[in-house]
Image (cartoon, rainbow, N blue to C red; front, top):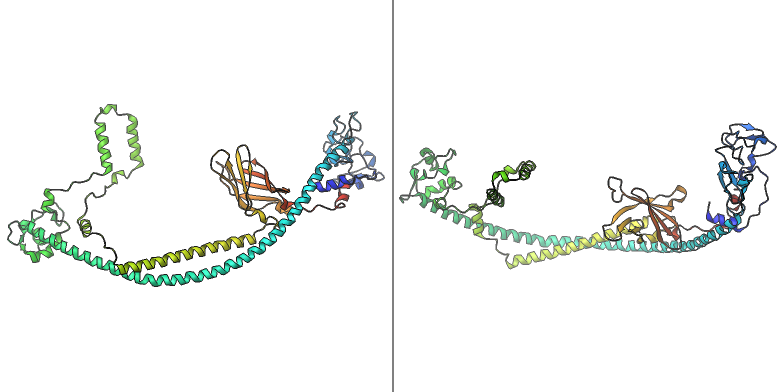
Length: 530
């Protein structure tokens, strides 16, 4: 029952003419109880003589023949409560010695001493309802202001949208112009960098070729043991690493094959021989003085562990450590396949290092690079500005099309947030965005749900907000929050609770839901019928 309607009922001080009807029957059902006609149970189950109504014996299954006695366990008694609000009580409370109706009509035959408190209750209720009516009236006036502000805001947003869309077109044209300029200056930059790289590659190739010739000459001299100007089969046999079939030995026939089928070659013919053996050849100087090999960190740790274990008798090693080793082996089955990275540089890598790094660009090329980079920076900046404008347009369009109520009365809530502090938490409601909870004395924020939809009943859909898909509960559903909107002069969160696990309820007052107070005559007849 609307509090405003009740206020109207109490305000007029109803003094209705007493309508004769059986005890416990509301005025709205008087037509079913006519003394000069048989009574038909309200559920239609049977018809009985009227004198059996309120005879303290239950004839009807629905208890409708005993509205004023306790005979039927499922019956109900109507309290008229003149001066206050009417109501119903279970028929079992009739004449039970306890006053349930403020007009004392339920204890007509119990001997209980009851006082009629309806007028006092009505007076208090009237005062309370008057305050609510005043709040509703003021809230409704504020709501009208919010509606007007929303209309102006909507027009402003439409104007802003048109302006931003124009600026977007200008930015799109600018981006394309800068793109063309960028591509224009990048072409000579690319060509200049390619020329520079090719010159460097050619220079490296020449250096490498010269080094290769020097190395070949040194190897020839190294192999020519008798210094007769030839490398012979016999001289080649000392280098078993050149064995072509990798069986561990280099035969004379194999050595002769490496020399091209002859017994010896001079420096000119050695060039073709060198191409076949240079990958396998090991210098005698290197073999006599091997380069130190760096120990991988893993091996170092293993060797330290081995040395440590030697300090103790084998029997004293704790079993747990052995178990740990076994577990490590199980967890890393590929550990045995580990291959340490090479610790010495290959000859090609050494040659590359000897050749040095690519020299800096000449001034002309550097100028082209700088110009191209400047164009790229300008292009990136223009694209960033265009993306920002796109985002701005999407946000404005979203706000314009958003459902802020029949008259956009909720639009002012869109960019606001409201907090409620309890003994443990700070609750934060950002309408149409999210609800969160944060511990008052430190800790991370918990998402109690993001905006879902209006979820009130069909005749009052804007009375409830639903926020869904919040942070998941431990072994439970994702958190969600229902926000109940009530009329108030101020916009504020008044309470929070958790009726069900991970499902929160938040009370939120705002003028946006205040309704226009009814006129004095509105609804009065309906309540008199109660």
